[in-house]
Amino acid sequence: MEKNAKIYIAGHRGLVGSAIVKNLEAKGYTNLLTRTHAELDLTDQQAVAAFFAHEKPEYVFLAAAKVGGIVANNTYRADFIYENLQIQNNVIHQSYLQGVKKLMFLGSTCIYPRDCPQPMKEEYLLTSPLEYTNEPYAIAKIAGIKMCESYNLQYGTNYISVMPTNLYGPNDNFDLEKSHVLPALIRKIHCAKLLNEGRDDALMKDLGVATMEEAKTYLAKFGVDENRVEIWGTGKPMREFLWSEDMADACVFLMENRDFKDTYSVSEGDNVSCTPNAVKNQEIRNTHINIGTGTDVSIRELAETIREIVGFGGEFYFNAEKPDGTMKKLTDVSKLHGLGWRHRVELRDGIETMYNWYRDHQNA
Image (cartoon, helix red, strand yellow):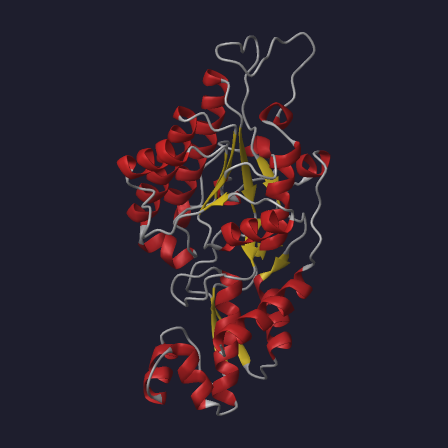
């Protein structure tokens, strides 16, 4: 990518999108194109078509998506599949129509089967049923992968799909109903600490309420009081976490240095070319790239680490009547390493940085 190339970052206010913008700016890219949801609704086909026709971006990072944790995914199933399919269809198709040089589609490792062999290799996609609680979101993301592959193979486009593991970092969503497990735990444990220490003003400011009665009533919905924090499930599921700014660095690295042709291998004698109708004697699939650390931690261990960093002296209650979700989700990152990129930020360091970021912004 040229430093003055017009680069559209869809979802620039989100966790990954904001980190991609920051990374690009730090590397000297000067012509970044962004739109808020109020300025451009990516589920609106006509609006997206008009935007691409007018702006004609040369490169696209498709980081916009409707995302959430296990509660949100299982509650708003129709919203998750509809909105994500609409966003993907509109942005990818308009990128093709307007001649975008390269596009990166961001998905999630929830695309893999619920009982997927561990660690999860790209080739395990579509080998058995998905985890039920986030099936609609996963199906939308699988459709995005296949859409990128299909446009590349039929039209000769250069679209790359990356599947990050669980992400966390600055600009994360800390909403207790809709956030993912790590930011949700940080906020719940932080609020429990404020309760425990009698820091009423700080707690009411954090929650945006006028009285302590409102604060306690709200937190009770999520199993939080001054001495205990409820956590869904048994605490046994294993999860992998990647610092969002590491994810952004991986995305920019791949966009700068790798193409669709680098995402798959062919056998000797096969006739494969990424030009329209040029694929012969070869099935091209599983071209997506896992982005992760290749290491994981149990939810219980994660909670203990956060409790230590936050400085909360209370207890945890693991509610086994609530779903655990998939018991283990660890990515195989051999393909990513082979393409030349490895993560830098380890989990404890990332949590400390994120907690400091959260406190600074709550007090702003």
